[in-house]
Amino acid sequence: MHSVSSPQKALFESSDDWAIQFDIDVPEDAQMKGQPFPAHIAAVAKRPDGLIYSEKLKKLVYIELTAVGREHEEVALRKVREIP
Image 1 (cartoon, one colour):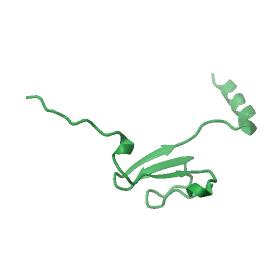
Image 2 (cartoon, rainbow, N blue to C red; image 1 turned 30 degrees about the vertical axis):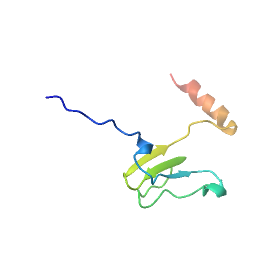
Image 3 (cartoon, one colour; image 1 turned 60 degrees about the vertical axis):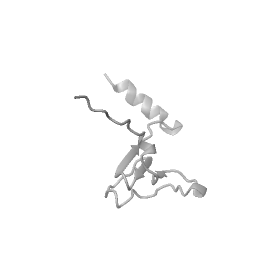
């Protein structure tokens, strides 16, 4: 017998309570640099560049940006050259 599965919803369509936090200063969007990681999710020393989470689904999207700023470009290039 074949089972019929229902199509899955896309992650962000699965709930209406998504919260977004980014490590940037945009006061009009309630985004502040240096905001702590939400204590009700986990106790961590460092936080990522961005978080998107749903309390209802108990899901967390962890975003770490890897673009190098101009001030760190030379150091990054030196590290890349050291890779065998």
